[in-house]
Image (cartoon, rainbow, N blue to C red; front, side, top):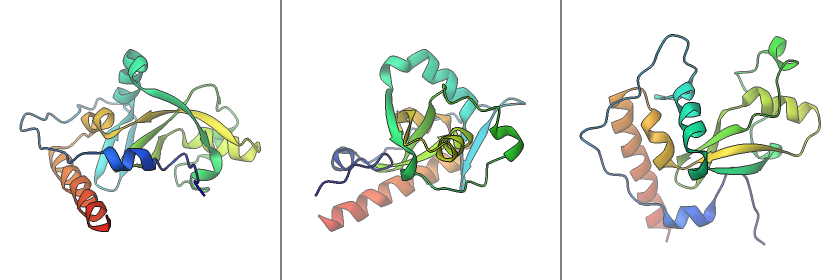
Length: 159
């Protein structure tokens, strides 16, 4: 039985490679008003990521994701904002560990879709090569590479 989930890409899991440190990596700059997404010590600049997606959408997969594949109660939900949320803008999912995708933008859209009983919403699906440039801290970048490569070591031991 092959279970297809929006937040897991088993075919990608087999093809992902070890990340190499780019000595010239420059953290994504932040400006006042930029939307940031914290995932532990890994903080992504969502505002700059959206601009990148808009300029490079032909290189990024737009997919339907199942609402049920993502956590129900996000700590990011502001109830007063939910009514004004438009479901026409795609969410963003990012490959946070090899083959595993987290919702990093669109928590209100996901929650509104859930409450409306929708089964799917659209999302841009970013692989590590797309989103790593939007980390805002050099130390977090280095830790991310160590984290990613550690997940691959675990995967390789299971084979």
